[in-house]
Length: 416
Length: 172
Image (cartoon, rainbow over all chains, first blue to last red; front, side):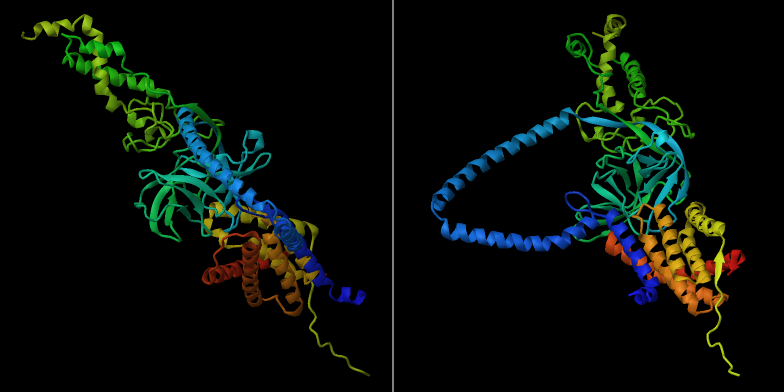
């Protein structure tokens, strides 16, 4: 025995070290399933024990079935009939209840619609990488003491970078979006098709789960959908570069990230996201008395004198309404910055809307720069309306004021 | 008078000082993590692997080789977000193999080191690929041209690294 141990000592130590590391791997690795990830060692342990358990259970069930199916058949037919009737009644009730539940969910969604705003960020320097092609992550110089937590979104002025994977005392590890274990809920800007953005082993980014019968043009921008609960909706991720038929029923959409993931130097970690109710636009709300006033005899429906002033006045009221939504995003590496989320350029908004880069304090005076969380443009009630579309409606409101003074003069001057 | 001949070639065994044993692997792991920030192409190199091979071939002790490889690999794993043990297992195998081969072959000249590094780089990648796909479930793509070219690149760098290690190793 001793001679065997002595002769094969190196090999035994090698096997022991490898076994210990494989065991360590099995403890760490989790295999994903429909329910929740399960550790590999648990899968192995269950896999080695469960066959015996299955055999025992089969033997037990067979014995029980033999007794019940052969010896205990009294009243089974009658019980079967009554149970079938009960099932039919309950199925009808279930259909009715599920319809009620669907309606309740829809109403709830309408009532509790909320927008997400990036309200606080922390700037960080990239200080290191994983150094491996199989692991695409970077380390930043902000950690737990700076308020960083796991699953916080990490962005740059160009676009989304990744999410915080692990937090240490004064550093954090950020998983990049082009890592194969990364996943980001995304949607296409114009077509509004939703999918999941994943990295590939080669470091590319692909958009998955888009049906193959959809049309996706190259060059279309990809935004975050907010569905993953990590990235606020509407952040720029990248642009579609190539679309090809993929496996099964989905397209294979390659996306070029907007942020250069191989040359990261400074990033922003989103530390706080606010949610608030979508407020209807009250600034240009027409009052009932104004609308009635325009219908009174003798009051012109579209006064020429007041119209230009009214249009300018209504346009002037836009900055006040929209200034609340727009805050300048500092590009300096300050300890906390306030960044306003950009709105996707779709729906009623013109395509000129730009991402939330550092707007240097210029007042947001037009609807094109209305920077709010996306989703409001999907037709939800009370959402921000473009000022241009409502200006003509609001024009009659202004003439109500001068109606008491110079309003009468044009009436007198008009030939009658 | 009987004349005896020594049939086996005397193989020199070296050792490294404790500071060198600790600092050189740490420096390799640090450079492996830091250089890709400035030079993205550097991810094809594996400095910790080269240090493992260098230590293993110099010490010519399978036990020391596998333990050194395992520790360096685990340290490298800690910087990635993958489970700890992937590089550990791969470099344990390489450390054991390189030191076992170092006993039998003369690996002091540049040509032998070049070929040795290519072979062990490929072995390292194969083991990593099998563990990552089989155990961890990672989706990995294998490309022979990429691996062979990376092996050649690592071998060229390895020759330089071994020359640096020659300066700090001590004869036992």
